[in-house]
Length: 318
Image (cartoon, rainbow, N blue to C red; front, side, top):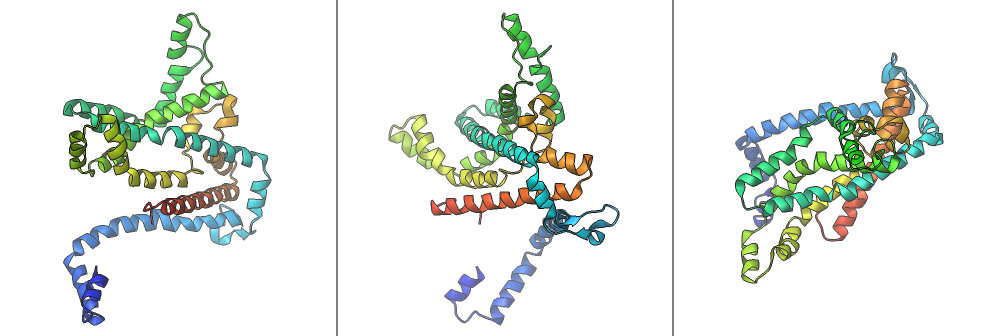
């Protein structure tokens, strides 16, 4: 803003421009003070902990700390890449996140469009409340609910199946069936909460476009296709880029709670590997090396996705 003002008025340069900036700071000091709170948060809990990444290059000793432990270079990464389990957990993480991207990512978009089409206000509010509730349920509780619903012996779903004369389905012990339960539970838990961003984006669409479409005789599906979806396209692209950045990052609670020894070929992921290596086996350097590798791969995916989005004319995230 100041630069544009200086370009329109060449006389307003140097000292005068600095004075204007200083005046803006004095005038809006409350906003700058409010901004210090999130800055302090990010510095304390996001940037300072990055110092701990040095553990990945050390033979870390918990008693000597980061400064006293021996530096061993990339030895932890060599050890990590030599482990057969490393490739299994990376594969499982990529597969589960990719399937979540394919099935879970479109779910809140579809729900947001459906909610936006509702004309009865009280029904819309009730529907939103019901859809939001699973987000606030702990994965420990969700894991218990899944077990009560889908266990082989005494599960509600299998009781209904056997009551109809069919054999019980091993939802939690068969790998393919467990994968379906895992994906379905994730959609149920996150789809409703994810609609908030898309509903906010839908409110920014010009209502006159819908009125003009009504005059032209467009039906509901055509309005969704030609007005609603293009109206939230930029939001979808940004959310997709952020989701691709998490393609190597997977939450700990969901696979840990829902997994069991019979489906470890699918359920063992990076987060559970880091937990077992870092906390259960006290291999802190190895676990940190895995976490650093995970973060670097995620960064590469974000850069690639953002570059592709810009090539297609979208804004991206920077």
